[in-house]
Amino acid sequence: MKKVVSDAVERFGEISVLVTAAGFNHALPIVEQELSEWIFNPNSEVYKNFLRRIPAGRFGEPEDFVGPCIFLASSGSDFMTVANVAVEGGYWAN
Image (cartoon, rainbow, N blue to C red):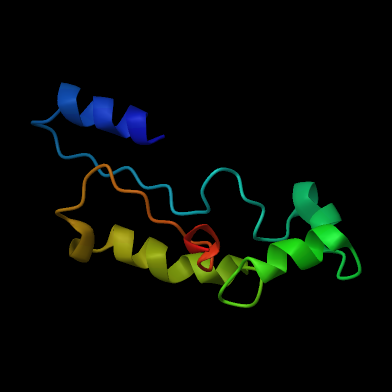
């Protein structure tokens, strides 16, 4: 996604376009959904291993994306270009 946005900025630099993709990076299934429900069994080792790596101490909820999306839709992000906003509880910082 970053490459697509970067190419668009180069090609259409005179046009103001805001492309946002707030979410988790590298398809990390940190929010429970139909395709990732197998991970959310509290008794599984996969669940325990994922949870250990999240400094926030919990998996994400859909509501966790609201604040970043509001920010990206606001004038507060007007000067941002080709940025990745990771909403993943600190998983990749670990």
